[in-house]
Structures are given as C-alpha cells and as structure tokens.
Length: 81
Image (cartoon, rainbow, N blue to C red):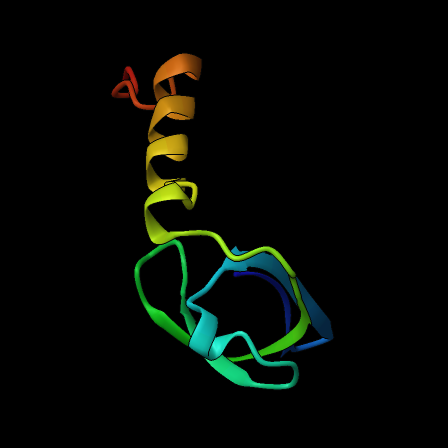
C-alpha cells in the first residue's frame, strides 16, 4: 500500500511516500526503511495509508526509474578528468 511517512532528524523532520507491504501499513507504526545507500534507517512513522491495494508485481520499480533517468540525462557516464 502507498503510505506517507515522517522521521525526525536534527533540526526538523523528513517526509517520504513509499509502497510498503499491507501488514506494515498501520497508522502510527514505526518502521525501518532502506536509504539510497541500501542501509536500514529506523524511525519512520506511518502518517497516512492509501486505500488502494497494489499487487507487488504492479508496484513501481524505483531502481529501474532511477537507472533510466541516469541513462537519459547522461549521469551514468564516467566523468572526464
């Protein structure tokens, strides 16, 4: 399910929206999510739960989207020295 989550950080908070398994999509539940470096980060609080259930096969593949963006913008090319 698509959920909006929030995590406290020094000087404020960070928000994100992500698809998570239905058993974890409970208001107020505290979760661990992976960051962009594939490390687990604790403290994400579920603030909003979507109503539409999405099958795992239909959920967006963010890794593929990032890879396609890098290819289309040239960010995946080695830097010239």
